[in-house]
Amino acid sequence: MSLDQRVPPDSFVYGEVVRLYRIAQSLRPTAIDRWTGELYATRADTWGGLHPKTGVFKLSADRVLPYLTGAVSPTERRRQAQALATVLHEATHGAMLLDAPTEPNAVRTMHSYGLTEGFAEVRAFADFELFVRRAGYGGLTLGDPQYPGAYAAARDLMAHITGPSCPQNTLIDKVCQGPGVMHFDQFAHAVVANQLNELTHRDRPTQQAVRAQLIEPMLHNYWPTLPGASAATGQMVAREIRSDLDAKVDELRRHYRLTVPRQVGGPSPASERRPASSAARQDTLDGLRFLASQPSPTGAITHRPQLGQGTRHATPTVNPHTRPSHTPLRD
Image (cartoon, rainbow, N blue to C red; front, side):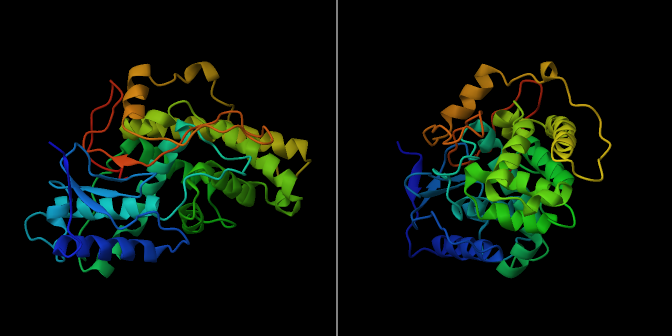
C-alpha cells in the first residue's frame, strides 16, 4: 500500500499549502521555483520533502497538513508552528537550483547536503515571525530546530563570517538564491568581503582562487551527518571550522601582503576530526537522491560532494551519542 496520497488541487489544504509556499518565497524572491504544483500527503516518517528530479512536493499527513488551517490553533500552537516552519524550510529549497555545472568552486559532496539543511533552518528561524504574520498565523513561536546539529553549525559559522561589508541578512538573501552546491562559495565570499576586503578589487580568477582556499577549511568531516546530530556537535564543528578558517585568513593576508593582521588561535589538528560512522552515512544516503559527482574544471576544490533534496525527517538519522530531536531538516 502506498504511503503517499495525492492532494486534490481543489481542496482547501492544497490551496493553503500553495498560499503559504508563495508567501514564503515572496519574503526572499528568487528566479527559480522547482515545485511543479504536485502535492502529496505522506505517511512516511518525514515532515516533508521536494523531489530533486520530479519537483513533487510531499508533506506529512499527520505532522504538517492537519495544522495548515488558515488560523492559529488554540490548542496545537507548537505543532502548528513546526508545520508552518516545514513549509518555509521547503520553500527555501524549492526556490533554488541544486547544481552549477560550470562553477569550479561548486561542492558536490555530502558536505553540501549538511550545509543546505542547516542554512534552510537558519533561514526558517530568521523569517518565521514575518512569515506567520503575513500568513495570518501571527503570534506563533518556533521552538527547537529539527536538525539541531546542522542548524547550530550553520548559525555559528554565519555569525563568525558576517560583518559590516556583508551582514547576516545580506548573506541569507544571497544564499537563498542558490545553487545548493555553491553555498560554501557564498560563505567564502562573505569572508572575503568582511575580512579580506582588499582582495575584492582583484581580478575574478584571483578572487575565485581565494574563495577556493577558504572553502577547504569549511569542509569539516561531520557536515554529512550534522542534520542528525546534536546541537553540541554542531557547535563543536563550528568552533573547529572557525579556528581553521581564521588560520587560513591570516595565511592569505601574509601571502597577499595585506594590512591589519588578525590574532587567531591555531587550527584544530586534523586527527581530532573523526569522520562520521559508515552506518550513519549510509542511513543518510539511503534517504536521499543526489546529483552525479562531477570533477572540477580547474581543480580549485578537491572535495566533491553530491547534493540532493533535503528531506525533513521526523526522526532524523543520528549519531549514536546524540538523541533524536524534532526539527530543522525541513526539506
